[in-house]
Amino acid sequence: MEIGMKIYFEKATGNVVVNTGEQVGRLVVETTEDQDFATYKALAERVRDTIGVVKLKYGQFRREFAECNGYRVNPDTEDLEFTYPGEVPAEVLIKRIKMVEGESAKTVQELEQTNKKLVETLERLDQTETQLQEAQLALTENYEELQTAKHEAADAQLALTELYELVLAGQPVAPTDPVEGGEEDNA
Image (cartoon, rainbow, N blue to C red; front, top):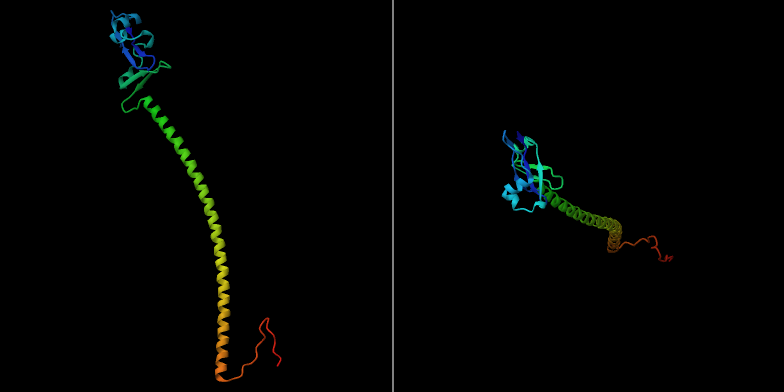
């Protein structure tokens, strides 16, 4: 006769308390849950209502049991959950996912704040650029006016120099066009 194993687990956590193992032989008899609670010390020490049981057929999950390095019972579904070498348990993954989600939410919030500050900075930069262009235009106009005034001053200085040379040479000075706003001398 072949008898499958029974896995007793804590209903609250899914942690395995007793695995009865598989049994094979002509004289093997399947035990009841009452007999198991009387036989296994780990079960006898527990409150029976807090313990669940999963009954497996002979050979069921043989490969999984051979390859795994641990297992538990999902308390919600009563399905077996196996862990394998190098594999991270589901609880650890869930904690990591929650941590990453929390950090992700925090990062999104920080990015939104940074984006808002960036928009404000770009607006100020646009205003500063406009002011700079206006100042540059005003400087260009002032420079052009300064260049015109400089040429006029150079022309006036040249005229004065020529007049001074004529006066020193004793030559008569020819009348020039009347100055704007001035009066003409008819004498």
